[in-house]
Length: 587
Image 1 (cartoon, helix red, strand yellow):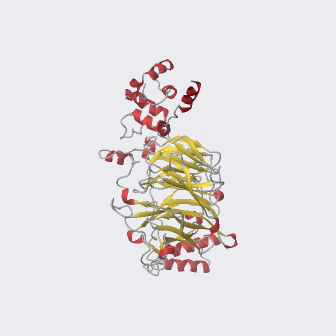
Image 2: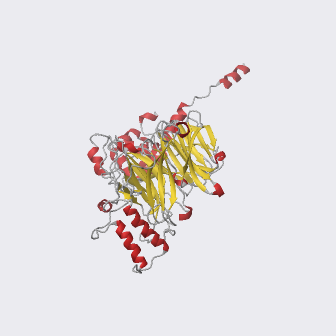
Image 3: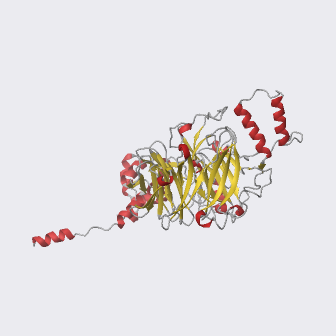
């Protein structure tokens, strides 16, 4: 029978999955497997098969764009990039990060061997270029990102300074001839950095104020600093934010709000129903009515207004606090750490620019973008996500260089929104339409109390993958689970994840990469390595292609069963020239 005349699933798979059906016994399975057309037409059979085999809650409806339940089963079986087709071994140390160009033609890899390598994504992937960053006093490369037109590559690394002090640095490499265009300091190094637009990138700096109090400054940098610095501004201070309790701003990324009203997928069931008449969408259902009844997480502003205390201003409150200390009226006695935190909190309330109004009222045509980053307020481990709106006039280095537009008494910028994760954040990634934010975290104990910011709570080995809707600023349904991590707080490192139209993937410390379906909220595949999997990356134009990077120094290339069959069909069959030559010799 032709491959196109019935299901592509092999008999062995059909035999296994039909055993899950109550109304089909073992004796009848063989007969059913032979009736390809009848099985493909039996919608009830495939519906039962789907829910039981993939263990999906029956409250989760079928994808509205799917023609049949068989199509959905076929999609999850045949389009998951779970077949290893190539292992790239050109790195000689741990591979930390992978990133695709927007066209999907190239991808970059960063490694502890201090190189960034550019690969050509063809049928057989090949190395196109390798840049060694050790001549610039780098210890290793850790992150890369192509700009929107793929003409420039941002590379972030750890820089070794005087007296072996480590900080971060960002390099910009031209994709035309692989020349180094500029270098920008980046502190701390796990800010990583990111592109704001085609020619401007965001970096960070950190200024210590006290033992556990600091100030993070986020800078906008022109990528062509060496060329344009004599004529125009190439650096501009974007935001200045105070950090409390040893926290710092890390892991910056930019979300474009312009597509929020026309996303690739909708994960909220009610919103999906409302939009189903106009466009194919997805629903991410809950497991039970009890979960549906739970109140959704509400998010509080990062900087709250001071309570009304009879007209007492923040300045008066700070003076009163000092008077109470000097006259011994503060009870109980505060430690040095608690005192520093209290003073910093009072100071920042009176010296902070108020949040931007109407954060959630962006138009579909708006040019507004969100700056997203990890931060905290209780301890040094990142446990909150900060969100700050970037207005159109802030997206260029032209204009005031050091924030002269602020009033003299406004030292700091406030955050427009804060999401508290109640755990150590170890990874973040945006959906392709920038509507949803996926967050890897390791949870704290439920009722933990943090009394010392330098002693964060213990963290779980199980990783939770949270999903937040950036249009409503609310968490969407339940967290994804399957992957694990084992390092303690002080050794915890970033595990990069990636999101495609239909899938989300993540690395893990358990020597596997994982793939979940975004609609059904189920884990579909485990991708094996010999060590920690640090990063994953879907091709932006072909979600059936996935890359994984590991501490085992390899990059593995994974394709779907369908893509593998297509590739094999395209390979030319060898001609029987040798056989013909032998026959001619005998004659």
